Length: 86
Image (cartoon, rainbow, N blue to C red; front, side, top):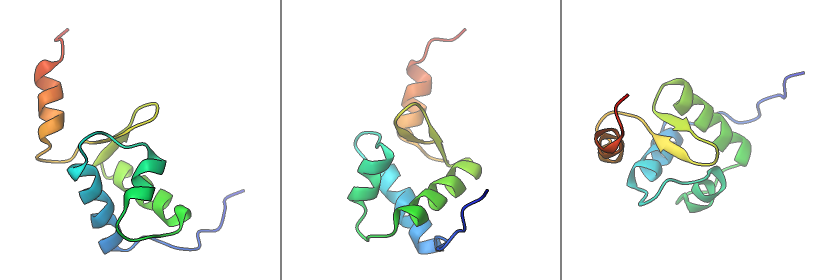
């Protein structure tokens, strides 16, 4: 049974979340990111926004953290350069 979606994120909400992830000094957990946003929103809307960003290939999740994988991510480039090639 699918839960009814009450609120869909707007473009400004998606951009705000994406900017918060990009500007972060460290990778956030979902709760840390949600609490750090400059504008409050329902958690259900926030989760929908993360689902969209993940489906569009802009973010990825490891066990606890959100990692920005979009274009021009200096943190991701540094991680790739320092990784061990197999």
